[in-house]
Image 1 (cartoon, rainbow, N blue to C red):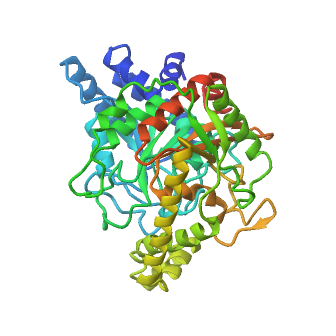
Image 2 (cartoon, rainbow, N blue to C red; image 1 turned 90 degrees about the horizontal axis):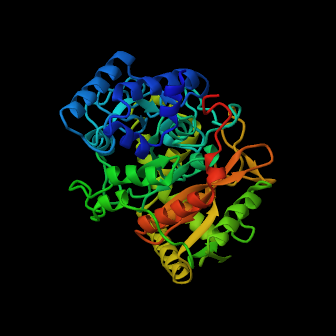
Image 3 (cartoon, one colour; image 1 turned 180 degrees about the horizontal axis):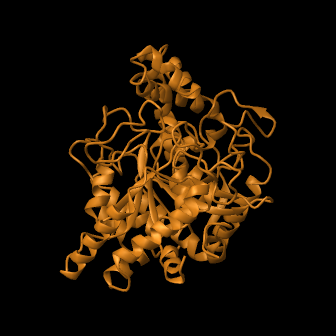
Amino acid sequence: MTNAYQDISRLGALDLSHAIHQRQVSCREVMLATLAQVDRLNPNSNAIVSRVDSDTLLTQADARDAQLARGESMGCLHGIPQAIKDLSNVQGLPTSLGSPLMKDFVATEDGLMAARMKAAGCIVIGKTNTPELGLGSHTFNEVFGPTRNAWDPTKSAGGSSGGAAVALAQRMLSVADGSDFMGSLRNPAGWNHVFGLRPSQGRVPMWPAQDVFIAQLGTEGPMARHVRDLALLLSVQAGPHTASPLSLGEDPAVFAGSLVSDPQGTRVGWLSDLQGYLPMEDGILDVCQSALNSLSGMGCSVDEARLGMPPEQIWQAWLVWRQALVGPRVAALLAKPANRAHVKPEALWEHDQSLTLTGAQLMQASASRTRFYQSMLQLFERFDVLAIPVAQTWPFDVQLRWPHTVAGRSMDTYHRWMEVVIYATFAGLPSVSVPAGFGPHGLPMGLALIGKPQGDLALLKLAHAYELANPTLIARQPPAGAAP
């Protein structure tokens, strides 16, 4: 790999866009550098799947160069290679969902997010790997196999946006999309030392969708190595859409503006392990505390915060909501009884549990969710931002399906070990995972910052200030992630 290609691969999306538009580098050169990086690193990490052939991609890159030569630009992603998470449709590419039952399905149209990214000029080089049906925060499936952590290939990359996080960390992509139901943009970001933003509920509308009124726990969003790239991609993904009546109407262009702010006086509420309720592996709270110390050094005030209702009540309400939303998705694959043998047991559990749910149970869980949201609003009378670890475990063995114990406590579901991420999701709040530091075995951990309702921009500004205050930490690269 030439030094010129190495330099291109190190650029974030905003710098890369500037270089392309200033004609300092051609779209063909960017594509060649990207493909060289993918060829070098992806065979081991398995982050990018369903790759488009090189000749087709170079032809598209040449077309982008011809547009620039005519003085035409499609937008901020003009000529920038992207790989879309394999839960979202891209016309002409498989949407396997990591499922053997879906491996031959080829999308006939773009999903809304991919369409917006394409309209801004990106070139889709393939998909990023995800767990089967996106379930479980560990990216492995029977179609493509596991994605390996950028910092240690024997460890999990997290999920479900694990492929995207690893592709970013290893400089195969300059910015990436993902989606988040139970921490899927935040956990893999924390485990691969990049930034991941779960936007506010309704910020990034999802279409096509079978339901646009109830299924609001999952959302698409951006991941990046730099906060300004995170905001740049959000400015492309966000914005109202007539097919999504609950989408937010704010002009997404606000996210493409300056992120410079003064964090002095920002009130940060530290949720920690919820007074011992959440089991945490050794060292996680210590690493997160170092990030909190950095926030204090920036002029923020950091004080203990407590949830306003018992966390076990929140979890039980969460289980009902999750099963009510996930169960029907799995049911669609079980129309033929023989298909059951080709669906992973965790997904079958979600489906089977959902069969016994009643409308009354869902309404009761919705009432609990409402009480929880009101309690969060009360917390935000005292704090501007809440902070909590992005995971309860360090990246675990890539061959393990999920941790059955955490800090000596048994996990009673396949996702209980990720309970820490549900609070932002359940309240519909924006949350960004920022790199917090590294544990004793050299593995990264993230700190989740949770913003006020629809406070995405303020949250991005704080994360940007944190990045500027920690240049050495943010600049650390995985052993195989950058050219030697």
